[in-house]
Image (cartoon, rainbow, N blue to C red; front, top):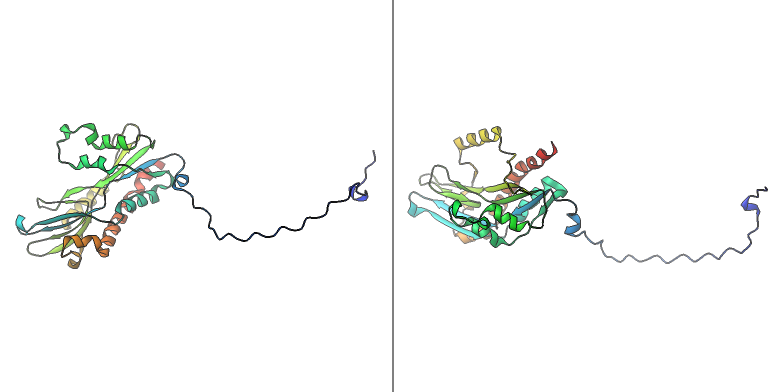
Length: 261
């Protein structure tokens, strides 16, 4: 066999003429298309989040007698439900999904009715089952407004609001009470709250000895002269959003750390 280096042989056909370089394309000026929400939230759902506070805010006053008490509740456009979801998503990452729903489904839960007279559709479990019929998440986190007693009075505070209190020494507080429930994605039973620990109980008891739990002092100037003005008060909005952010950034990581252990 004779081996001839290729560079020593004359080509049998002439090489094709080189093509002129293509003209460079001008940039279109268009930005790359952003990923859709569906693309970002692809993959298995670890936790579906249902936020049901409905962005309601209360202006409340407790006076010397019942005749000095005042209460007003109004819708605000402060993005509180959006903020709640964002903080849960920040703690849980890619496996967290927001569940949309018909807000009227939660109306029956807020109507006063004895628990044994409620039908399944009027219970939290029944409502969640209707909402997540096709969601297929492993767990569901439901965040609503919580109602709590104000100190040693017979008055309650619900959700987000500002309170002026005291017949002798007037003090003004803001509050953000959240009712957070974690449900199993198949049985819909309520799962244990990972933040319910001996340490947290002791801390809450200690707080109750020196102040009204969940109430935070603010300057009296924040209390609106007219209740309806609260909806346009940026200082009130920012103060409440800080409370919500602080509470969720403190509590949410435990819901995911428990799964990693």
